Amino acid sequence: MAESHKIDITNPVPTTGTVWLGEELGLSVKDYETLKCYLTSRIKYAFNKTTFRAIHYDEIDRQLLGSIELKGKDKGRARSNQVGRTAKITDVNLALGQAQIDTAVTALLDMLVPTDKMYEPFGNAEQQSAALAVTSELNKSADKFCHINEYYKVFSDALRYDLGGCEVSWTKVIGSQLSSDSLSGDPIIVPNSLIFQGNRIKALDMRNTFYDLTVAPEKVSTNGSYAGYVDILGISQLNELVDSQEINIDYVEDSWNPVNGLINYNFRPELRTPATSEKDAEHQNLDTLFGVDGSPDKAVYLITLYIKLRGNRFNLTSDAGQQVWKFYLIGERIVGAKRLDNVHGRLPIVLTSATCDSLGDCMISYSETLIPMQNFASYLINAKQRGYKKQLYGLTFYDKNKIDMRQVLNATSDNQFENAYIPVDVSDGGSVGQFVQSFNDAPDTSGTMPDLSAVVDIMQTLLPT
Image (cartoon, rainbow, N blue to C red; front, side, top):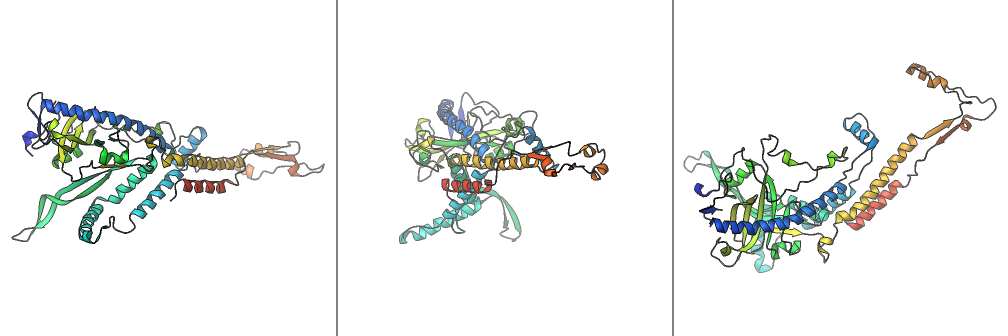
């Protein structure tokens, strides 16, 4: 890539001349501004809905993953437990819903991948040889890029949020390779060699994935006009993309302060189980860790956008037909562009819902169906714990005219207490049991464990595994 064609992202976009988006892809300032407005308007519109969904996902995760804010004495007990001072019981939120989802995802993967090979050939007799060749390459990619791990994340998100997705891209792995000299036969290291290339599947973070809202999620790759996501990167990771020629910018120094003004990154909540304070259950704001308060690291929000457009409209190409393009943006600045020559002509982002029906976004996820059962199970176990505490710390009354507790109550040392005795006056008949009354309002929790088992059975009905 010609060095002079790279963008210096630390400087503003030029007002005259050519703006280079790739090695041989340059636009006039007017065409660049028109393209930028076209892309950013769609990103902003779609990402508003993404942010709305992210708030809802936070609510699901706090309940599903067992986060609970303890107060009063339970808060003190939890802190004593954490430092190893005691082993006291506190209220809990049993993560039974997440356990049920994990089991369901494992069952799905067992059905889809019943053997040690991720993909298996399928076709008639004439297509068998081609199917075997394609499957062999796919299995190499699956092993190299750990497809099964990414599928697990996609299925888990689909059950938890009713929306999951992945990006499918042809990826080249470049690095140093050990070889031998053709003349001497001595081992040599060959830098910048193609080590491997194949289909890479990347599970998407649904809190930061946006797509064309005019189509259902499962139709985005075929009928949608655009889809994309935002990643949070460090400066070194950004420069690695420069090396791999994914983005068309000069190397960036650590002193650069990135501008991430187009959209806000939706962070996951910082959950604690249990949360011993309100602060523990809040988001961890990474803006305080990257680029603020003297931190040496900087956060770059890199937007990846796939979009179908007519290249001649922006002078990207002379072709008047619809094409699939991949763009990179930092803030509102386009820092890379590439036309995708896929045969299928689809967007390489695939989204799925666990329940694809006419309800669409109004359909509740499996996790929302399981959470009420999880809450009830948590209530049962907490009631049983409180019942045990009531039995241990009940209220006892005694007749002080018949039972003399002064010797015990006035004991000033352990020795005196150990050797103390309690006089009981039974001169007028009766027994000690008649002079002592204990009161305890502990609930009957003998049926708690069978009830818990029944709740688990109901959850199995809601999401069979």
